[in-house]
Amino acid sequence: MSVTSHATKFAAPRTDAAGRIALIGLTLPEMIAALEEHGLPKFRAKQVWHWVYHRGVTDFEAMTNLPRDLRDTLIEKFSIERPGVMTEQKSTDGTMKWLLVMADGQQIEMVFIPESDRGTLCVSSQVGCTLTCRFCHTGTQPLVRNLGPHEILQQIMYARDVLGEWPVAGEKKDANQGRDLTNIVLMGMGEPLYNYANVAKAMQICMDEEGLGISKRRITLSTSGVVPQIVQCGEELNVNLAISLHAPNDAVRSEIMPINNKYPLADLLDACRNYPGLSDNRRITFEYVMLKDVNDSDDQARELAQLLRGIPCKVNLIPFNPWPNSPYECSSGNRIHAFARILNGEGFDAPIRKTRGQDILAACGQLKSESQRAKPTT
Ligand code: SAH
Ligand code: SF4
Image 1 (cartoon, protein in one colour):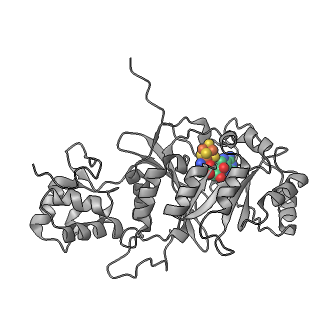
Image 2: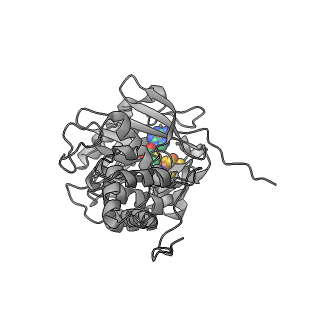
Image 3: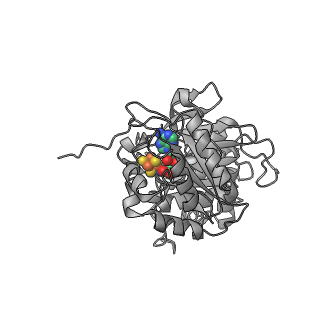
């Protein structure tokens, strides 16, 4: 067996049951190293990278600019995987939801929301969540495990398969014209910043022009407020940031989001103010779920405006989506409009988010899979 100079630099590649090395999830240097092990030169690895990530092929036979013997080596030694699909549901409003199954049997949900001017894919980052925000269905499912970079990428790649959205030969890079899937939001199951390394690796491949070619301006990461990784994410990825704020002060926020005890509002908003690249054209989104008699009074709207003053931002008001046995009710339509009007009067954009896919439990905070942590063996 040959020993390469890369041996200490990279983790051992994943292999499937047949011992073939899985390509999805590898960065370009990792792919170069993996192919080098089998005597393939760097320029061939670059061609394979392009076929896999940019053109989305799942069959080595389709890599038509590679010689026959090379394709045979690839077929024997490597694999290009997609997740398994348990169910696909379509809402009356066009929203689609998939229950995807990973190689180890764990399940996650992914949602696609088509709108007139864009199509947004809501991607999961963990199976379950360590946090226990009281209004969130995912929060009732303990963390089973983090998703790997390949599993985060596979969601997006599978969506492109289903929607028929891979670029064709010679198409302009980052071509957006006529695409259904234009935006990615890391807003599915899990807290992306508690799985930062894997999310970052996946997003770097996603943003690479020769990779999936989705620009950072079309990617939004939503976090409950993991302050140290917000700073790191700003420096390294600089994707759009959404903060699950949901309260105008520490008392209310700590009650509904226990993470606030660890990273209180002053620290969270400092990290937001310092997020690189903010301007009137590139604002932070603060998510604010409307909970009846908890965070929805006129005074709280004014307090919120005071809190966010000076930060280039908008506030997304999200009608609370109920789930079985959820402990809250959604504020009334009138209350939500009154809250929005106060924020508008204070100079903030505060759109009320249209609830999508509620009939198939695909709306914000409704995602949950049946995956459970394996019982410890004795
Ligand atoms: N963990 C990350 C991303 C996933 S949650 C985060 O918390 O930001 C995606 C969004 O849905 C968050 O803004 C979350 O606060 C919101 N959400 C959770 N439960 C909800 C519910 N029942 N109704 C409406 N929005 C909800
Ligand atoms: Fe986890 Fe986000 Fe749900 Fe909170 S809102 S429990 S951080 S998924």
